[in-house]
Length: 547
Ligand code: VG1
Ligand code: CO
Image 1 (cartoon, rainbow, N blue to C red):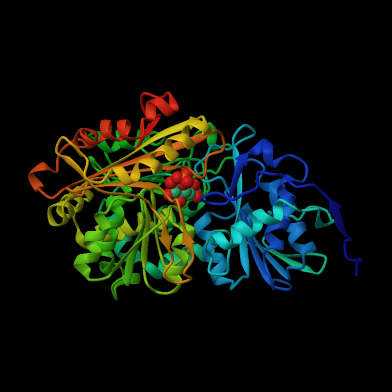
Image 2: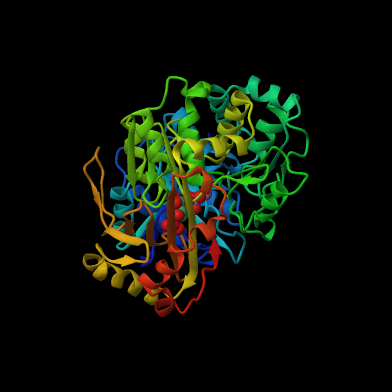
């Protein structure tokens, strides 16, 4: 028996900027590469947890640049801090939803996910890390704040002195007293998907000629998508494109939206469109769904999934309720109303859904930012959303367009768009929000043409399960006709501030369901600009990204 590797206690000093944002800590890769930076944060995670000695930690990342080095650091620190076992995806890979599935399947104490999601990767890109609790979901604010507090006073961290663990061979090794188990990153997730969806019905649809183009964007979902769509469901070879995960995502922005995945929209609008075009992001938790000739907004997708979930094996008993982040359009609300089930409005970020899912109040959750998921894990799940659509299409035997238009005809249409002003100066962005807050009391009753402001507030969330309160989650301006403008600052960016403006208009009349979105929102867009004086505060005359 070799002597156990020595545990080193390394002296360090705090970094002032380790407050987790909407989804963990995200910074430029170069920031994470500074000596002690990652280790400080990891030790701060462990310091804010209790009772993990001898327990299991799940570890994986989206494979971006610096993933392998970071995995080794976390492995050695988790061992030094007394975890009994670390379950790590082969190659250090786990998509975010797969990490959540593995935490749950392994009944682990928690997990660490290394990802900056849809942000670009590489030496000049971004890196990120977050902690997930035993339910498989992102740590709630109570824990993320404790991590931040610890990071401000940290003096040392613990790490074992040992050679790097071989991440590429399945099986068990040891780091001192700690067992390290390298697992297939796909297997547990694939089994879970098979338990939820009718793979036979979807496979039959492919055999009958259904066509799919899924862009993995050179990010983590490639191996998952190949295994599920092509190998198990029989989609034609080549249905999954950019399937090989690359450290820098091929130099692209792995964000499945209409800007960075515009080629899919172009394809879907062309005469050669497949029946379904789809994509997911850097870490596999977001989804893009485009039918032949029709883009499905994430907010509509949530509503349509909720309305049709009972057609899918894993949800055939019906759904308990739906939750959506506050800026997400209210299309899902009307579905919940019709089904007579609960609808919950939470702040932005998946961590706010965890309690509702655990308590069984909701089954399906979603965000306007291309996120949808269910109680099968505690993260949003890109491939799950695509499988949900495939299964619904297989059962209904209609096209995406028919289903979407039918949904609008039944429930009305929520025209919806998000305007992002990226990398604006933080000072101006903060002043814009502060000014809006000051204005709130004077807004109700004001009219602008046909638009009358009915209410205006700064969204605060009272969690009905643990009673925690999260304030200042976005300024909402609600109009008498059901239209809405929401303003908030991004909590995932890594340079300057990003202002997000969410604009929504409800149109019940089916005769008006064929308008172009920006045109339909024509009266609200200039009002969103003038109410907040976006130009005055940011110097910008137009958004940098419209989705
Ligand atoms: C954005 C989205 C939010 C999402 C978050 C993490 O946050 O708006 O809906 O939950 O990203 O998604 P923000 O604070 O930048 O608006 V991911 O796929 O980046 O983990
Ligand atoms: Co993501």
